Amino acid sequence: MVQQKVALKATNSMNVFNMLQDLRHLILLDFRSEEEFAKSHIRKAIRVTLENYKAIIASLIVSLTHKK
Image (cartoon, rainbow, N blue to C red; front, side):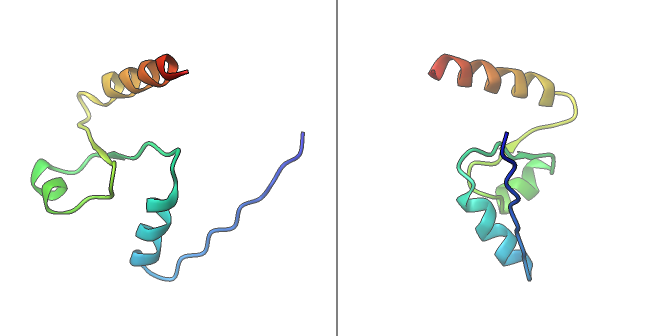
C-alpha cells in the first residue's frame, strides 16, 4: 500500500473556507444554532444537533450506499 501525504497550509480563515469548498467528498456537519447557520455556512454543510447527528449520519451512509 502506498501512502501519500497531503499538505494543506492556510494563512487565514478565507483560505480555509476556499480549501473546504474544493473538497468534493467531504461531509461537513455544522453544530451551530439555526440562526448562525442561516447567517453563514460552508456550501453543502449540514446543520445538525447533538440529538439528531447520529440519525443524519446513518441516513447519509444509507443514501451513499444506494448511489453505487
